[in-house]
Length: 239
Image 1: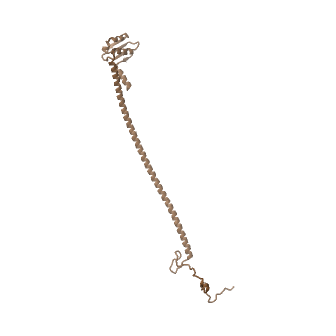
Image 2: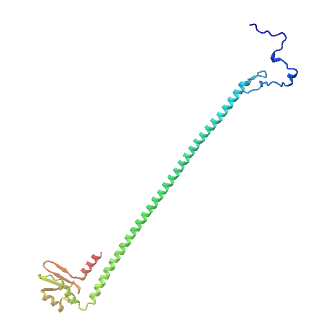
Image 3: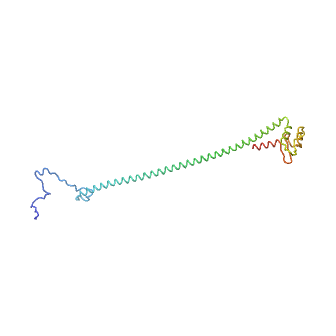
């Protein structure tokens, strides 16, 4: 098959000029801007850009910027969370330290107050014991003095002191044993003492005895009927 040979003088299709009615509806052709570009034009004024590559690279750059912003936001958010967690942990640690310090201070104050209370109680107990001992001592002395006063009053107001001594001796006489009774001299010579002789008692005058005293002696024992001895036994019982 023979290839078509263009006629001499024919105008190429891309250089044909529209005329007449065809030219009325024609407009300027859309020509891409090739002298500008951020990604494909790196030269002088004569260097033209690549619009297709420019669009692809611009879209890729925008995607990269969007991803970087998202990554930055995520990184910042994570960093913020870490900082917030660290601040929260530090705040909790500080609060726990303050709480422990307050608890330790409260415990120390409680122990100090308890120790002071124990010291006060011990001092009060000591003072109370001292006061009670003094009161008891004074009460004992007062009871002894009162007893002596009452006994002295009874002896002083007795209608017949000698008869009282004789009755006390007769009440204390042991049975079936020879007895010697020591009495004050003026009591030993009194007529009422003859009743003791009737009981087989030997009466002996003793100048060391008071008018109300008597001492009974047997081969087995001795009975002390002195008033001073009786009062001593009262003091012993009261103490």
